[in-house]
Amino acid sequence: MLFALTIVVLSFLVFLDWMNKKRRYDMSSWIPGPIVIPIFGTHFIFKIRSAKDLMQVILEASKLYDGLSRIWIGNKLTVMMTRPKDLEMVLSSTKHIKKSVLYDFLNSWLGQGLLTSTGSKWHSRRKVITPAFHFKILEHFVEIFDQQSTILVKQLSKHSNDGKAFNVYPYITLAALDVVCETAMGVKINAQSDSNCEYVRAVTDITEIVMHRFANTFLQNDLVFSIFAPKEKQRLNEALKVLHDFTDTVIQQRRISLTQELTEKNANVPETNDDDIGTKKKIPLLDVLLQSQINGKPLTNEDIREEVDTFMFEGHDTTTSGICYALHLISRHPDVQAKMFDEIRQVIGDDLEKPAAQSDLQELKYVECVIKECLRMFPPVPVVAREFTEDTTIRGNRIPTGTELAIPIFIILKDAQSFPDPEKFDPDRHNLENSVAKPDPYAYIPFSAGPRNCIGQKFAMLEMKSTISKVLRHYELLPLGEDPDPVINLVLRSTNGINIGIKPREY
Image 1 (cartoon, helix red, strand yellow):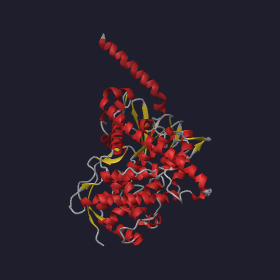
Image 2 (cartoon, one colour):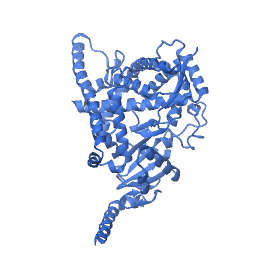
Image 3 (cartoon, one colour):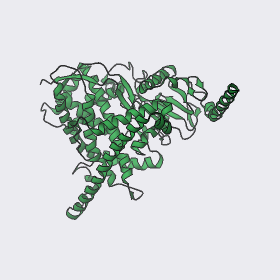
Image 4 (cartoon, helix red, strand yellow):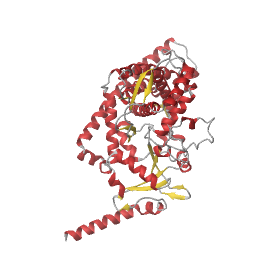
């Protein structure tokens, strides 16, 4: 009797699953993919237990299926796309801007900020934030980059004479956090002087927990997560409190002081032309938000916190990853390092006390090519995801509404058709004057592409140039320590750190 009842229940569940998926299954049947098991979805979801497993599964799928494949995770259909022409249809569109539901795991931290919002809210926020990356403002941010990288090279000096490998990741993390706090919120937190910075620990905790839930389908439900992973849930809540309390405090204090500054300015100083923005003082993102309006209404503290938290995350964790992997690759290619050092000396000179101006950084053409190649080899954001909000035609066939779209950037950037000999570290492939053919713009997308590309990519490139050039002015990078073991943890991290050696430069 029990056996028969079990068969009936299972049959009923399979029937419901089939009914629920039928339209999407029929429409997506033209897309190749692995075998689908009723209710559970694609069989390889049972192989995923960690972020490392997830990365391996994506790699395996990309090898089996050429450019386009589909998987089912329970009731959810996901399509993985890697061909530039297919990507252009999606990324260039103003319709396909909705992020995947998987980004919902970040909502408790980032709310509906620029990274996670969609529709009219995203459009209005993007318009408000864009002035914060005006080139005149970035020019003054370069001063902050230089000041913090000066502190960084002093912190690294303890490793300059011992001839041993060390993990550079913690040092870059703190330097990047100092930069983003001062540029985003206008406050100094001196993280490089406090290696036990509470904010850094909180960010690390959240990203690890989010990726653990992302890789484990069972834990994606909030209730299940709370019941079966109570310690992780508690750690998540504690980290969220640290991050939100910090941002809220800064916003409240800055709102009061900015009101006072504007009152004093209006009382004592004649009005200046709007074209002077950024030429008199550094204008952090927070000040731009505090003075902005949407539909005639100022942003609330919650609105502002969403955007500041988003920029704090994207502006410190991603840049840290990019700089660290770049230092690793440069240390392993002495000919590239020598060429970079020669260019840096020609542009900035031999005076180690001289700060690098924005015009100097723009002249570092070869350094930029090296950074671009480092981002190709190890993209800080290895995967992005969207959701189709309507039936969409790709390659003459339809993909149903509600389908998740996974874009594995770390695979796209190593496609042999776009980048011959893709495992070779070759900065010259980004020198368009020497290149045989200009690559497809949707083949090189470390900052994504289209209307939803990274708003801070110029900021990130300037910060990477400033930090890397400062380190190379002071130290020769040595190929010491084990190679990194990359893992997707929202950003691309390494399970064993990013190891290099250094020794003082000889001029």
